[in-house]
Image 1: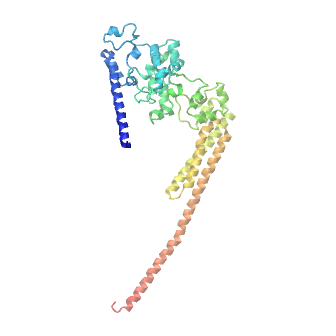
Image 2 (image 1 turned 90 degrees about the vertical axis):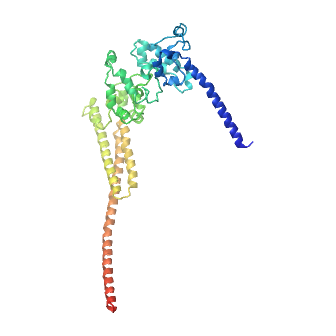
Length: 419
């Protein structure tokens, strides 16, 4: 049989089974919705729910509220034996959501984790609710919504990275709610102005640290003194690595100070500068301490390197506008820039020797750049000077040739009787 006919036969079979499957599935889906008599009375809730992730996967009212939605009579729909619970309390919310989301067989299809309820019970929220019976403890619906739950990757989701801090602040910014726990309510305002908040809200960087990335989501807990470094280290890997080589590492391990937060603060973290050596260090050290002087040396080298790099960058930029080829200097500039950038994480080791090595490398490279540009400018200057006698010679040649031309033209005119 010709290949084309075989291919056509397979296509016909494929589309036959495809349309048959869709045709069989559609009545089932329609039947699920049709048999949901809850929507007769609860039309408003159904309007909210229609666009939710749950309805997309045929999860309807009875999965959370119990009852028999197929019954048209309200008494029968809520009769004993239907597990009707109406409006669930917070414990029931956590257990109802967790009952499905802990089902490995069901969740595997969607690639969702199944330990969320177990994690929640270890969280500050979960302990508040399950151990103390305090319904101020946030549950699933407080963060994800009720009937209108959408995927966490949907920009409309309350827990989408851009929305998450606002969602957390609904409780954590409420003075009445937080008063019994003596919890500060200005955290969101501090976060908004921090380097992380600016990156999230003003630059739209969804990868930046937010409440859940530091505290956890379902297992949310405030990190203790010993855990802060591990929390920050999830993103700031190199800084954490070099900190562990510093004199501070032992003190942090013993719980004397909260690693990163001791210098950078918690929620109000600003973009760090070397000015921290003159402020944060004084929280623990006196100006005459050897440790403080060590910090001063490190700051001096970092500042000097940054300044010489900036000067070298401007020199290369200016030389390029002058028509000088700067390929070699550009490559050296990248190498110097790498050395200066490497100082940022390495300074956490508080090793004067390491910073001095990088400082020396950057200084040598920037000096080579300056020398190279200076030599090229000098060469260009000499080439320009060398052109002066050449142009003078050309000018004189033109004058001489013009004079010779005039002389010959005059003699020709004298010999010509018609002139």
